[in-house]
Amino acid sequence: MDGKEITFEVIKDIYWDDWGRFKKVFSKDDICKGVQYPTGIVTAESPYYEGISDSIDLDCIKIL
Image: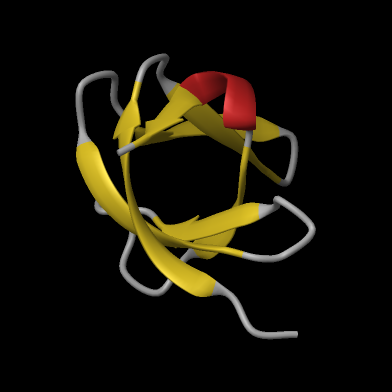
């Protein structure tokens, strides 16, 4: 399943679970690139942790 590249603005800090410890991976007001899939899921790589990517909570971003 192919996705399309998007740009999004982070409207709420985003944290990911790292073995029971939450790490901030996107900060409010960041402008980032990601991929949106036909299912609506958005994935992106954290600008703070190279090579770490995962799905993004859509309530925390605004697609530009």
